[in-house]
Image (cartoon, rainbow, N blue to C red; front, side, top):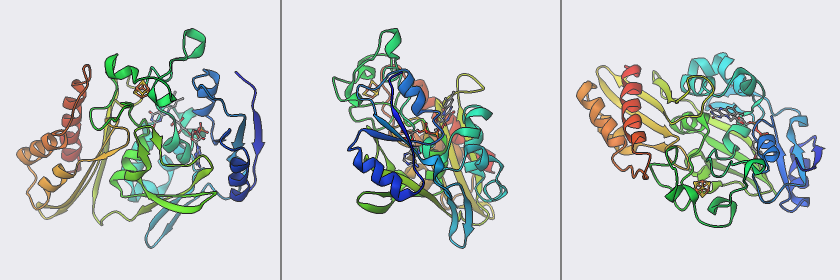
Length: 325
Ligand SMILES: Cc1cc2nc3c(=O)[nH]c(=O)nc-3n(C[C@H](O)[C@H](O)[C@H](O)COP(=O)(O)OP(=O)(O)OC[C@H]3O[C@@H](n4cnc5c(N)ncnc54)[C@H](O)[C@@H]3O)c2cc1C
Ligand code: SF4
């Protein structure tokens, strides 16, 4: 592992000014569960010279409720999302997603901000330097995508543009279904980014001197039923092959609102809007659920080796909707 400087910062302003002073050669470290692995395996061609430790900033580990919804600080641990009474009560889909992440050890250390910003798990990208890597590819700034013509069984079935890696964050899927926004601050001031605009095919929307300051989750519709489901190959400790977060609101026997978010199928979590529209105003029975599940994957464009993910996504959507009922 190459040497780097580890700088403790004690305010958000100090974090941003340190990132700015380092002119692109610094990265934030929160729990360190992802960034230290990336550094140890020497995956990146350009190494950060400085890690800016934001855990020393007081007051960023909160879950607060107000009239508009829940505000979550970036240093909240995934385990705290799982155990928080207000998250369990109002945002069951988020607690459920956090519960599926890694192991208790990872959830006790990994933070909400770090989970959203974690690097991709594409196996070409992550191939360690010590055993014959580092493999260069489009996402690393040099060469074509190796998965496009290689082994792409775990890659995107929707919307890859050049890079077909999927977003590995489970909580992002739940946050998309909940209509959450990400408040950031950086050298150019503060902004609020809806979750659907946060991810892009080569990573996320953050600038090098910008950090996540808060996750803002609006109150879900009253009486919304919520469900998060995740399909993995290994049962414990595995990233999603496909995940689904759904919210369903029923008025009597008729669905008045449905939200369906798919995970691990695209560079970011994805809303299945056509499927949602097909449920609205309908009585939900096996036929309507199957129809919506089919619409959720209608636009999928699988690669050479991942057509099976389309069928898993279709089945998970039907199961998650059914579980809500
Ligand atoms: C064995 C294992 C299994 C895992 N399984 C899953 C899984 O099933 N599902 C899943 O979703 N994840 C999984 N993960 C990923 C894990 O959830 C993340 O590593 C963790 O959430 C990252 O949080 P952290 O605080 O440790 O981030 P760090 O490692 O400290 O940082 C990760 C990235 O986020 C950036 N960052 C951190 N905080 C901020 C901030 N506030 N603003 C801007 N940038 C920031 C860092 O610069 C870095 O680029 C797994 C990881 C491991 C090691
Ligand atoms: S999917 Fe993305 S990260 Fe993976 S090899 Fe292709 S360009 Fe690189």
